[in-house]
Image (cartoon, rainbow, N blue to C red; front, side):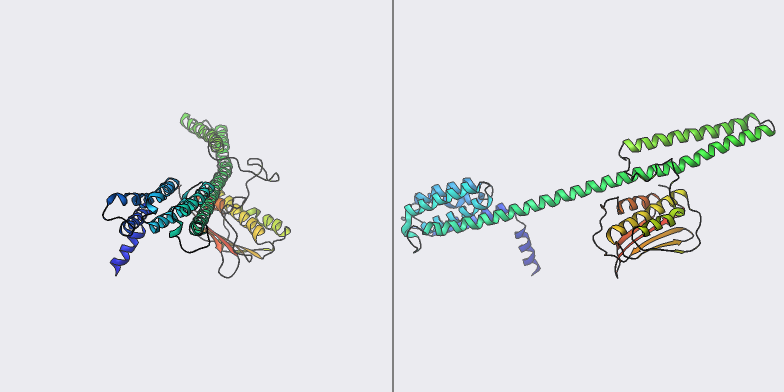
Length: 395
């Protein structure tokens, strides 16, 4: 039984051309066995071959096949009218379905109907006068034309869906690049601040030690090397940020109310209360719950945590306006877990939402070797959960 099913699957997977070859072979055999041929004269059978053999190419060359069959109707129709009509129906259906020139094909069908009526009208089924060929050929053309219109619409929908998918992917990639540029600037500010402090402290230490007593030349050289290395690192950081801004990481668009990096300190969880209050003022009821003992966080983790909560609250305001929302902070020995849970509808949210959405949050979490989960909750609402290691892995 399995072999039979397997054979059936193999037949369904055959190219369409071979199905047409089979159809042409069957019709050829039919025309050679049934017909008003005189004796065994093979010359009478040759015109009938032009009725059926061209049908093997009815999908690839529908117009050409149609006119070949039409030309063969005259010599073959007298000897085998049934085969001529059957081939004409198949050719008519094919030219309507597979030809781009629908109205030309309709005109050809009307001409063929008139010619068939003139050649062997007496062999047609008993119908009102002059209606027989039209009653046979027009339905075939209409069916083929309807199927072609349906196929064209399906192709159009598929093309539009593919274009939409490409546009969404391009938008997602643009959001990733934009968010990476923003992250790069924030990390630049953090590292630049730390290196600047190192340079200042190294210079101050050298001056203090120099005032107390003379330094050995080696010690002086070492302190000067630390200062020089720090200044070089700052210069490299500026070059890196410039490269990120011009080679694939465009500057992120910001509201005018948000200070530029370097003018004001980057936000962190220390500003969470102010963020929550602004969201409450905008109409979203938000509560904050903390588990564990809050500990000082690395600067990068602190900024990433704030941005993740900020973006999650923005999405909650957009998709769950007015729904109760809860922020949960879980301080653990090795990681910080963030949760934003709302009671709004759990659907209709996408990675490509304005403001980067989940794309930006995933980028931030990935930088520090963490993970992020976002999706509808089982009971109701939407949940965003992020795990950030307190000792980020080297990327």
